[in-house]
Length: 353
Image (cartoon, rainbow, N blue to C red):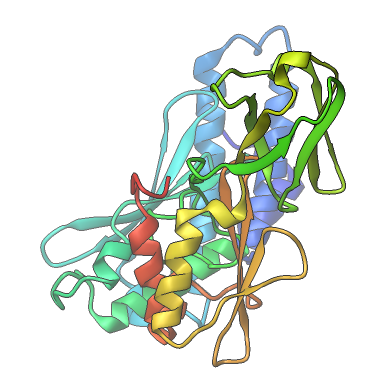
């Protein structure tokens, strides 16, 4: 369902395009035609026709991506000669392109591009090297030989350059270290504690300093008998300090030592960060505090800095690396402690997330 009389569309079919150009230009052409039909009383409810339209453009994109990959010198020709692409369309809004490697025995689906024409397109690993495989003690855990792994790495990079990305950190190691993120948890069982004696009834305040990145989860103001007087006053957080104050402290609390207990989540309370510190130290890599709160840096022997950012507000860990294309598998090859750390905190390790 392609209008081949359209000069612009015809030009897209005949001229070579990069992965990024194919995605952008064919995606734009599809969206314009889809919008035209969606705004037509005749076509707007015709799901079968709209599904056929999406299928046609997905097929075109698949063919142009195949052409773009075949033109790349970064991917070995023998590997390219084993690849083929298959597109499927589920409905008027969802389609996929599978990248498949043919072998003597079978067709091996490597990955799929989900909704490849949309702005929200993503890669989904099917049979690609994983963290558990590259860190396994068993040398046979990896199902691909070294040359195939290099080719797969180049394939993933080519698709990344087109803006297609994997969305979960643990589905494959063929994704850039820079920009990776994952959920973690914080040890909130270590509260901040401050104590202060009540000298007289009336005005009273008690406080303590907070880490810059700390997020207050809750607090109590306890007397020596364990009664909570929190509602007697109010709290204020200012200049990295938590302060509780009251103007109505009763006579019965005079000569009591009140205890302020604050539950916080902060980068310093992250088990995942503690694990990284230990593993890196065991490999003679020292972790240091960055210039900003929640930022931790590991200077590597290659003169580059591996950065970990902790955000207690959303329970996330973010990774940064100067080279935007360096993949987990490549950095782990240089510095295995990084894979060891990720393996310890992913996937679904209860102690860390």
